[in-house]
Image 1: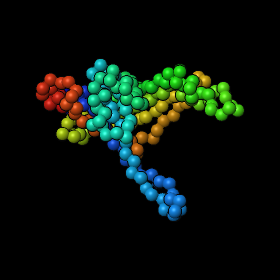
Image 2: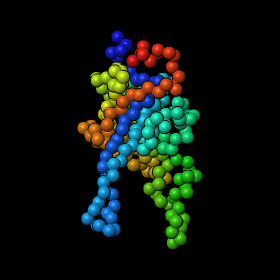
Image 3: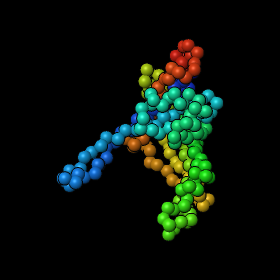
Image 4: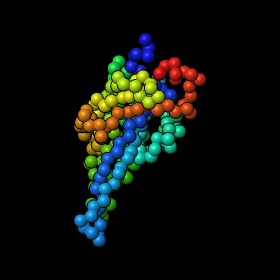
Length: 203
């Protein structure tokens, strides 16, 4: 039965809310007082039926961002947006996301501002960011009692291309770290085109 087969929902976004506490700076009046700050940001995934995917990380609430995620053309206006492709492996989703930094912009950051070092290239500057994610479908239902409405982190790797042509690779420890890598929950967006009742049939 289709309802029991793991599948993605295309008429909305998958949202993961990350919240953590961090130390603030000590007061000059009382060096023993260090305030705490609550930091919140969101990871948003937008899947398309043609196999493409968008990922955006932002401190802004998703409700203010989804209008720009309706299609890939509008998404280009979002700072830090990642574009990529995904593959459905049955019980999990694999994806590759990339962000290319223009040569012109990269060169602006290559030259150090110091007059003594003017013209020296900074080899650590990035010209391309690549991320490899694997998310698995949760067996529990998501919001609005939807099947397959929750995606859990399984793998998160990166491979960055530096301006000197070298690669920087690594991975993040996502399994078991629900604070830094909470699950994605599907949220339907009414402005994303879908025939009336279509989402209820599939989900």
